Length: 149
Image (cartoon, rainbow, N blue to C red; front, side, top):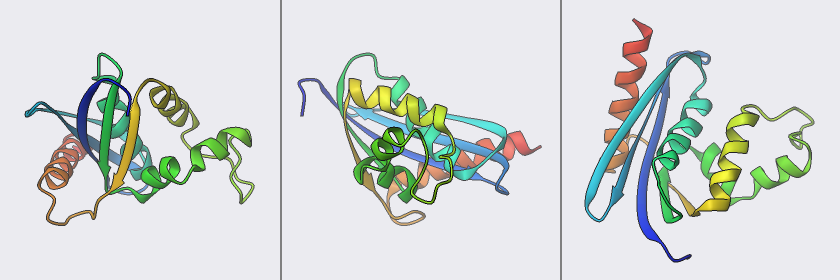
């Protein structure tokens, strides 16, 4: 861990249809203080919302921090923790199945944050007994429902 503040972030994304209206949410926790953020896109995918939840939360940090991010998205967690993201970048954003990686601009933004902060991703079970993940899910669904109207 680098020197810096320890921040915990919970994230979630929701989408109705894939693509369709979607929402994302995050809860940042620092020193016992919680901040909720959320947003939506009219025509998006679930994976895009999961990534955006992480990015928008990281944007809130004003200085380099030690960050633990809890996400129920295996796609996001594995992209970082299993090194997929670095492999994709090295292969010019082409996956092992020879298809282009989706959401390249978001992954490039993620790489920038990974250079600034010491970030660890933790996979949590979705729709389970994790209070913060469940709150993020509710916020993301609310955002999705608002934009779908």
